[in-house]
Length: 99
Image 1 (cartoon, one colour):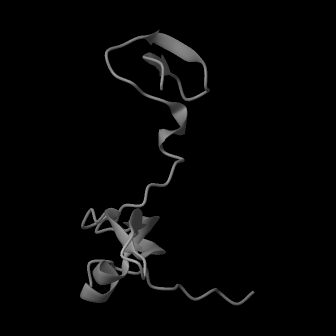
Image 2 (cartoon, helix red, strand yellow):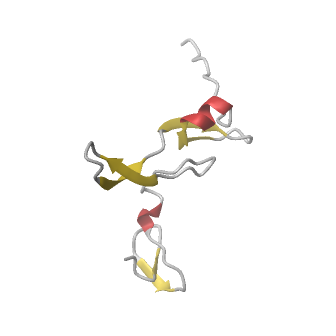
């Protein structure tokens, strides 16, 4: 459980506040599409003898560089359906100048 203390960008603990926040929240990667929000689903693994055990159906996420409308480029976890449908705008490769 995350403590209810606010952490500053340098990792030091700050003053008390009403919400939980950690320095490491941006570093953790969830299994969720950045565009459509597709998450893992839960189902049953059925054996030959019809015994059912729980399993997870994870979305097919790929790490893709996306260029936003203002020109900034960021690497996101995106499902393959969003890549195929054109929701992701891939950045145009710039040519290097000859020295």
